[in-house]
Amino acid sequence: MISSVLVANRGEIACRVFRTCAELGIRTVAVHSDADDGALHARVADTAVRLPGAAPAETYLRGDLIVKAALAAGADAVHPGYGFLSENAGFARAVRDAGLVWIGPPPKAIEAMASKTRAKRLLGIEPLHEVTEADLPVLVKAAAGGGGRGMRIVRRLADLPAALEGARAEAASAFGDGEVFVEPYLEHGRHVEVQILADTHGTVWPLGTRDCSLQRRHQKVIEEAPAPGLTPALTDELRTLAVRAARAVSYTGAGTVEFLVADGRAHFLEMNTRLQVEHPVTEAVFGLDLVAEQIRVAEGHALGTEPPRARGHAVEARLYAEDPARDWAPQTGTLHHLAVPAGVRLDTGYTDGDTIGVHYDPMLAKVVAHAPTRAEAIRRLAGALESAAVHGPVTNRDLLVRSLRHPEFTAARMDTGFYDRHLGDLTEPATDPHAPLAAALADAHGRSRFGGWRNVPSQPQVKRYEMAGEEHEVRYRHTRDGLAADGVRVVHADARLVVLETDGVRRRFEVARYGDQVHVGATRLTALPRFPDPAAQLAPGSLLAPMPGTVVRLADGLTEGATVRAGQGLIWLEAMKMQHVISAPTTGTLTALHAEPGRQVEPGALLAVVQETSS
Image 1 (tube, rainbow, N blue to C red):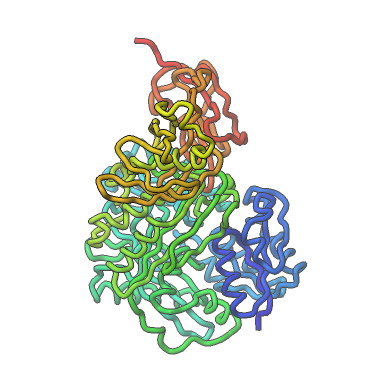
Image 2 (spheres, helix red, strand yellow):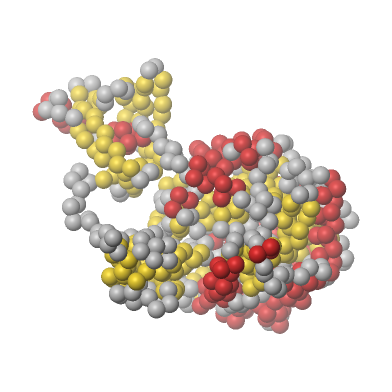
């Protein structure tokens, strides 16, 4: 029997595994980098072991340090979570060689499926070796790893060399393996997968299907189970192929076989030899705890002859600290408050007051709703997200709510190109016009007690706020009866709650303020100074860092004085598992260059200046 488990991971998945271990009476051990000192997963574990450093390559990707940590802490088993070393056969062997129980598939199975090219060949599928115009569009893909790293869509043959180079560099940085391959890119396919669970006695359970078609940068955003709209014949085919793939490598434990479904046909993508981020929707539908099942399998227990019966529908949304309207730019800062209504599941690696840093994935939480029908589950999740308190950096919360309510999604007509088609509409600013007034009235709470209305009763107070990139000015007055504003009746105002009445309709606004940052319901505002700083001006053509990150590459030969063309990639930033290209805004001359490889930059840092060529 396993008595103590080290989770070789961080954040949400570490906390999720620890929760099950606590329920089973198993002692828990966390590992943490210096950047994660004080992180939630390190706080909730029974024991925490420091991994010196901050970058993943120094910490969570150091299998030797993690094995030493497990032995030092007295753990007798290791759970890899997802990402990092979860699909590293060498790490799995090192865990076993140290006399520890590996809560995962056999190293040989990981090895067989770790390379997507080997996995395809195992099932008789060959990647493209020579790409022609007739093959376009194609997808350049990293052979190792996942999460959308090392993937590029290529629509012109001339762009293929650069896509291959960029994908190799990103894959090598993320997985330590720069191998990439090319396969056809299906424009309007659906991403469908099958969860499998296998024991050491020859039983393989196919635990239904999941649809993960809503993706950004090839990384999933909204997932659901079961995948809607599949014919019984196609569902059976997917289940059969998934079991075949598992049996081909003598698989044990939890794993996922992924497909692209187009024109009623299933195209094998890969097998993920680990627990998936989206596993909660399968747990909800089948009434299982997949982590508990992983532990039982690792202990040698046999599964039943048949899996549990599926019930209802479940939908999961990934809440990210990112700005979808700005090319999904990751965001950092303090997460002041995170809470969702009762009736949905919240899996998170953060709690109030935690800092969202630059080193790791920007996912804050997963929110999951389960209901008897798909429509009910979607409505429940959209409503919970809309009323959730998410106070801190910009997030994708509004995008999630709109995505869940989009006609294509509600009618189950979505595909992997959903955000390519609809991102503009989904990120249109949707702000409450009364939010700035509510923020100002909450801030002014109590001032009328000091008799301000007697001094200049007709003089309005003015406050300015930035909301969705635009400046808003609001005016209110202190009167004998309290606070007042034109066009609305102020029913109640205090520091946390403002009630306004317009045309006989009353609305409540819950207000929270953290320095200059103000949250009014789901609307995020920034209080602006009364008088703008005239010195806050930048030279035309200034290129600013859109996010915190590390400069990983400059364009070849880029120096001050160089001529650049509009749209040319100049500077590559890496932040929170993603690379972002800073391009020249115009054709001209590079008059200043402050970026250099290895340098960490904060949002708004000046990277370079491009002076436009005069006509």
